[in-house]
Length: 387
Ligand code: PLP
Image (tube, rainbow, N blue to C red):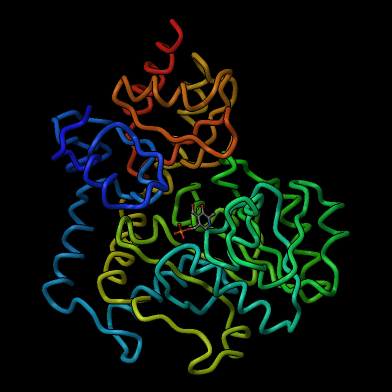
């Protein structure tokens, strides 16, 4: 029985009961560790759903947000800001060459909502294709393009016709992407589905056929982007240039923000008033974006992500883990028992991981700053399970 003063009791009394919550209360964090209210130190390999790209209390991110808060906390897009200009320039710099313009928003769903709106507007078509098992968010358009969303969708109808391509089926992609399609939205590595990395051939087939019929290709990199897969954006591993990339989660390292990146040609079709947001591109979010992108570059975090991925692949197929899928630090550990049981057993050993839509897949979404000893700790803890 929890005390009446415990935040879990008070949240249960005052917030909607829509989340299954974990059995601890974080109070602070440092490096890759969360420290709980009762003094427990937990290695966080889940990063708050892939958000904590730099872990906790990273001095560069803390300083950037603090300095900006002391200077100017907010101004909207009604004025230009030096820090927003810097954030946009840095994003364009790391994106595929064809993407030269940024529209800042506040979340992944909002980025996808705008990307889908752009696609329907410029193509004047009313059909969106997504990929089976994909997740794109909970707003009207993003949820409409999300696999199996009908049980929670809630709106009376979807804003466009939707169909789903069988994943990794190049022939199905070629057959379904016809001249009535406004866009194909695809996560290069399907995060919620259990870090399922779509094949390069499949991503290229989508690119090729979309270009042929004048449909846009939207890469949803909300979970896979900003270094998480060992590339700035995961789609770059397949050498594919989408028409739009959406980003959020790791982008601000914990400061809520999102972005949609598109080509000059697409951007030219939108004038004042056609898209908008109050908070998107605010100075605090922009300062966080600049700090995250600078830190990834200056601390060599893409290389670190690739090294940690290799280490996890070679050391962690132990205990209940049968095989590993995904890319970089967006990994799905396929278990021989329910992933929730493995997560709970790891948590008892002070390691936090996550589950996924696939009941047998445990997800790793660790900070990009993960160290060699953390992976060894995970491997040792996995080996203990079921002993
Ligand atoms: N797209 C992908 C691939 C995601 O994983 C998520 C969230 O998990 C979203 C979109 C929605 O992002 P948000 O929760 O920031 O709206």
